[in-house]
Length: 392
Image (tube, rainbow, N blue to C red; front, top):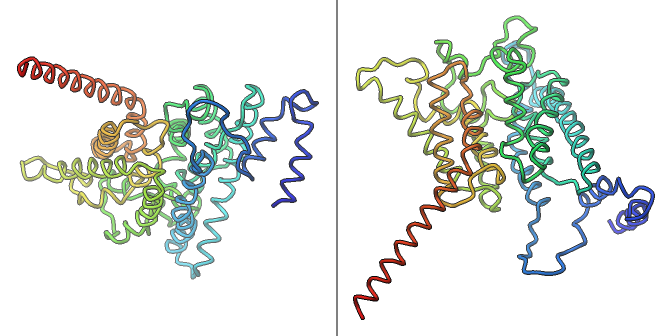
């Protein structure tokens, strides 16, 4: 590593201030900081110094995503083979899924980082590490057969409109990965809903590529049991099917302090309560449908609910910042996600709209939480003053 450090220091000279390639310094510095921790610290003022910088935070999230990603690669091939009836091994399924997913990841990083570098050079600031996570999340929430050019266009929209238009990393009001998925959903609806969640479903006869949510929304029954849903042996987006792998990722985020456990816990509570409400409708004489009669606990395992709550609702930039606000924010995401899922079968993946909606309202939630705290403290001061006067 010392040899690499010395080589980088020599290559850095033309990019230093006043030299030929000074304008392109942000691009070179991005490579440097990706390989090594930045060698500069704050010079003045009071600062909290900690080993956990933005790069380490983003890498922690990437590590938390790996279990769901690896399983998604295997499940992508598994769903194809079990429907075609062909004999297969673990590696057959994994390699087939990886052959579809890895190109999507490469396109996402090449296009997204290319735009990030261009904006950094244009604005004269450093390249931030935020896209390390976004670049992986985008292909993980897409259908496995999504055309690569559609992935590229969705990435362009997410980075340019969803992030750079607001000032870059740390300034966006919407989760960039979900912004990409929302764009793809409305721009290319035939590639984002229906028979698209299993590779080959649109080109090979006899393959059903519909998700459980889509099947239920059409009034049909599903043949999967609760353990299949929890483990992830079901069709869906690349990495959203396995609640078990997502739970492992959630534990990594919570233990390292990178993800907010308050948002995660309250999100699942909100979803469970909304599902329980719909499950109770028949007891009051209200006729239900497949989605309302679906067991409330199964709602927590299917679709993108678990993945969205764990990896997107906890985005520290677009989420609520106050402690009480995080409880409210997470609860409403889960609550609205199930409500949208059941009330509007045209949008069975209600978690996407639920999170984007609460991204917009997160500052409002924090505002009223802070104002409530201020009023409570003012009231306490008045009460204390009155008690002092009475004592005197």
